[in-house]
Every structure is written in structure tokens, then in C-alpha cells.
Image 1 (cartoon, rainbow, N blue to C red):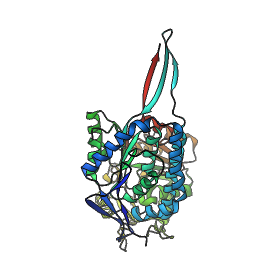
Image 2 (cartoon, rainbow, N blue to C red; image 1 turned 90 degrees about the vertical axis):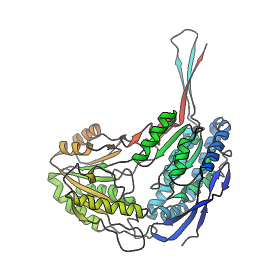
Image 3 (cartoon, one colour; image 1 turned 45 degrees about the horizontal axis):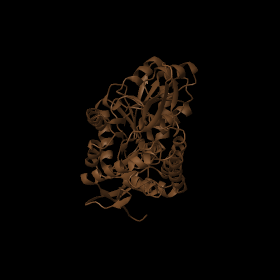
Length: 477
């Protein structure tokens, strides 16, 4: 058992206590307290935003080399400590240790990628339609950016928001989920030694009260949010009224289509990985598997066998393939959706139960449900629960796949170039996977979706700079 830690706010370059604290527990063993996290007051959120505002003039005018050096330092240290930080992540969020270490490495590479991008921020020289006039464009920082991040990727998502924000010369206030403060605190501790000026990066921890105070602060120029669709809509309403720039990454109800000509082994592995790995707690998880009639029975038999063989256990146990869900609320939500699915006429094929042990262990569930309009096929569960839906052919499978409010990720398993091409063209989603799981993306390319899944410029990759900069046009006579 690792020692309990104290996670404090980081404001104006100082570690700050708070009147209230919250215990950060291990979902594999809720009797173990990973750490005690400070809960930011509204006054502390105000202090953090004002600190970021005060640091903006100096950091926004820093050189590309200064920004590169800071971000590269952060990435290098994260990578060197991936085992330690991965263990912290596994203990507080519940990912199995290999997945947790992989997430930490991804965060490191994100910082290193954006270190390079800091050197490439440029503009354009454009010929004027008027004689004796020169026109150029440049990009400059948006200003003070509030980052609100979820618990399911507690170091990667803060990284893919903070790194481009800092690379573009913005100053930052990060508000992570109250369920996973440890990873954000560890990231802030590394950033505190990176050479950033005081106040350029601030950490405030707490629940939705702190998040609301951050969104509504008049000195915040932009908000980047990842979380629920409901909260995202509230943020959008406020930002639209107050003329703040905003970016939203929200839910998903991602389909994986299996066609008759698919390689059965590849299809099963794509389905299991997408639906169940990371305990299904990914916005890109494939929670609907749509199978055409000719392969349906063979696929059903094979995925049932594979699912029954999955080992659910503590996140840091070497034999575990699936960790616990994050907390009791999520466990109750999973169980509730199983009951909803059965009440809607679904056939529970396997799993869907709380497993023995003190942790929040839940057996991966497959529900056979041929009604694509059922709640279980329309609402995001955010757990290791997937439905099997039969379609007569590719055309019906595509129609079912598109028939949700969401459009984040979608996959197809097929050996047909024709159908793969048509799916890529006609699927209403921001990310399309062919013979690959719907979850699992590269760190250097755009991430995001359509419909109710995303709003605003894409995250990650070079396109992330679109959100964190403003374009200025200069006319020189």
C-alpha cells in the first residue's frame, strides 16, 4: 500500500490549503485512501484566475524557444516517471496498471508534441487587392483559459488541453474531476518546476461549485470542457451569453458494425477492446455492436466465450484485464442500465452484475437487444455494457449506426474496400475506425466528433491551435 498524500491547490506559484478537503479513495479497495484533496473555495478560484490574468502579459510574449523548453521539460519528466505516475492513476481511477502507464506515456508525448508546435506558430503573407499595401496575419493567445477535465483520463486529458494552451502563450486554470485529483496534482507539481512564470498555470480542485465559478469568472477568456452533455450545454449557454470562446467534448454512443465478410477474430477483439477495456469508461467506447445477419450467430458465440474469459480484478493486480468502475455512483448507474435494458425486452447474455469483493467490481455485460431505439441503444452508460443489434445488411447497419444524437467515434469490421469506403463517407462521426476498436486514438492527430458529442475546434494534433489562438490581420501601407 502506498502512503497517503495531500493534494493542495496550486495558485500563483504557491501550494495552498483549503478549509474543506475530500478523501480520494481507491475504487479497487474503497477502504484505502489514496490522498486527501483540497476543495477550492469560490475565493480561491477567483485568486487563481486573477493570478493567470496577471501572468498573461509576460507568458504571451515569451519566445517559442522558452515555450518549447518548458513543455519539453514537462514531457520528459512525465515519461521518466511513468511507472510511478501510472500506479497513482491506477489507484485513484481504477484502470489496470498497463493501461494507466500507457496513459501517462501518452500525456508525456502530448507535451513533447506541443513543445514542437510552439516553434511552428506562424501566420501568412497575403497579397492585397490594393496597390502599395501589405497584408499579413498572425496568431496570438486567446488569454486566460479555464480547463475542466473528467475522471476517466485524469492525466491525458489535462495534458491535451494544457499543453496546446501553454504552447500558444495562454495562461491556464485547471479544474480536474473531484474523483481524480491526484494525477492533476502530480502534473501541477511537475509544471511548477518547469520554468513557467508564477501564475501561468494554476490548479483548483473541487466539485461542480468550483467548476461553475471558473466558467462564470469575468476574467476567463475561454473554456475547454470534457464531460457530460448536460453540463456541456450549460457551459455553452453561459459562454454564448458572455462572449467567451468555448470548446466542448461530451458523450458518445459509438457503434461497431460487423459485416458478414469480416474476419471473425479481428471483429471479436475489436468489440471486446472497444466495449470493455478501461472498464468501458471511455467516451469512445463501442457500446453498440451492430452485426449483419449472416455472421450474427458465429459472432455472438465467439464474443460470449471471449467475454466470459475476461478477468475482473484490482487495478494493480498483474492478472487483471478489467479494473473496477470509478465509484459507487457509476456502479449503481451500470446496474440501473442493465435493469432498463432487460425491462425494454433485452436478453442479458452475460455479466451485468456486481462482483464479490470490497471494490466497485462489475462484470462486463452483453445484452441482445434488437430494438435500436431502446434507451440502452440511445443513452451513454459509460461502463462495460454493450448491446448486440442484428441488421439484415450493410445499409440497415449504417442506418442504425447513425440513428443516435451522438457522433464521436464509429467502427466497421469488413474485408470489403467498397463497404469500408462507403462507411467512412456516410457515417456521421468525427472519427472512423476500419478493422480497429472505436476507442484508442493517436496523440498527434485531431480528436473530436459531431452532433451532440463535440462543439468547437478539434482537440489534439496541430488543429488544437485553432481554439487556443486568435487570428489578427495587419495592414501595412
